[in-house]
Each structure stands twice: as structure tokens, then as C-alpha cells.
Length: 358
Image (tube, rainbow, N blue to C red; front, side, top):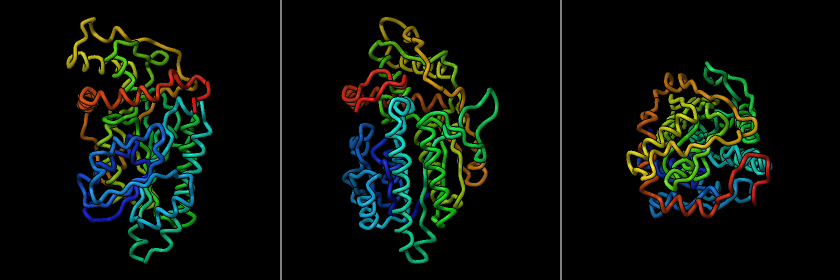
């Protein structure tokens, strides 16, 4: 993996996936890590508290849309690699407030690419050869699948939500900067992540929190939408594998090989909670409540990660059962963390076309 003491600039490093990258790099590599994060509602210093005092860690409170601030961070820290994860990422929020997604995911990515290009242009030949800009994206850019098949790296883009469209645009920008300017870019598109420190508005944390409080467990539509679930720590391993060994200009799909309907996923979470903390009122499946579907809700996603397996030897270590068990155990042990965030940012049901609260 990463065995050299390089400087890695991680954008969005106080968010869910970004903080997992930061924690992994500090725990398991000699890298120096610079965390660039705007600390919006979904970013919290608590996600990286355990590594914040490490001398190899530095935090930069900045917005990726701020070109002057981003350029100053590049000049100050002179990174050897960039892992660009900063993004607005919640589909329901994008339906209610698409402008923020275009500004952060598209404009912010352009700012990062330009700052990286100017920095890269100023490196010596060895530094230019070693530099990498890793753009981290989603499988949602590909649109929706039928009952069979899986997304591959050459699947045509067909984004169907404002979030997916903004990420598709950022992917195209990253590839354009590689093709036009020679910036050494790699791109990854991942399936649905889950695990510790996920912001409480996403499906799994919502179900766990509501189930523990005896509240209805909202399932959109008929609950038969299918997602491929990827444990966040497996994703981090894949990201670092691609950053260190991936071919410049290539895209790699990262999937968990764990397809489930949303309804099956919710039932599994209920069972795991019932085993660990039984509810005197009975099994938590009784709380499942079908609600109005999300507008334009994609029916099925599935990732074919054969390229990543074949070229770089990565594959997920967690099954959905083992990953969800670890996730449930973490949320049970960290109730103070998610309850505080939930109280601060509870906005009710999103994704029905109403404006997101500022």
C-alpha cells in the first residue's frame, strides 16, 4: 500500500468517507495528511478527533470553491497526492436544493483541478511523475439498471438526479484536465457506502436511530430498489490501492459485491438490533412504514469491479452481514455522537421538492 512518507491532501476529510481515509492514513501509513474541509453540516471535527493531535496531521478550514484559499493550501503544504472527496452527497437534498450541488461538486472540483495543475506544473520532473490527483465519485453517474447486468467503467453516463448530474460533471472535468493538460488523474466510482461516522440523514443511520427510539422505519416506495453496499473501510483500502498503483487516466469501479433491496436491508438491521438490544414491545420489523417514493428514484445499481480486482488485486473483505454487524455495534457504542448531530440537523423528510433549509 502506501509505504512512503508523502504528503496527501484529502478534501472533505471531516466527512464520512474522507474521515475514514484520514484515520486510515494516520493509523496505517507514514504519510503526512492535510485535511481540507469547510465543516458544513455533514462535516464534524469529531470524526477525526482521534488523530487530530498526531504531528503528521494538519487541518485546513476552507471551502474548495475558494480559489485563493485552495491555492494557498497547495503552496503551504506542497502535497504529493490529492484525494478529492469533498462533495455534497445526499440525493434527497439535491432534489430540494440543487444549486449547492452544482457549486460544490462542479465549481469546487474545477477549482481543485486548477490549483493542482498549477502546483504540478511547478514540481521537478520526479515530483511531476509521482504526483496523483485522485477524483472520488459515485456509481450514480451511470443511471439505473434493469433486473440484470452491472455497471462497468465504459457504461455510458446517464445521471438521473441533480446529485448524480453534478458528480458526472465533476468526473468529466477531472478526465478533461488529464487529457488536455496532462495532470496525472485517476477516477473511482463507488457503490453505496456504510459504516461508522455516517451522517444521520442517510438510510442506515436513519433506520438505526428510529428503530432504537421506537419510531417508524421509513422505506421509500415498495422497498424493492436495489443497491450494492460497500463497507467504508473496504472502500478506503480500494481508494489507496488506486491512488498508489492505478494507471494514470484510468477509471476504476469499486463495489461491495453485496446487492440487497432496501427492504431486505432494513429487515437485516432490525434483526441485528433485536439480537443486541431487544425491544420489549417486540421485533422492530413491526415499525417498517412504506412512504412516498423519491422522485426519479433509480431502481437498481450494481458494480462490476473486475477491472480493479484483475489489475490491482483488490476485493472487499466484509460481507454485508459482517459489515452491518460492525456498523450496528458502532452506532450502539456511539449514541452520543449521532444523537447530537441528529438533534442539530433534523430537517424532516427531504427529497420531495421542497426547498432545503439554509
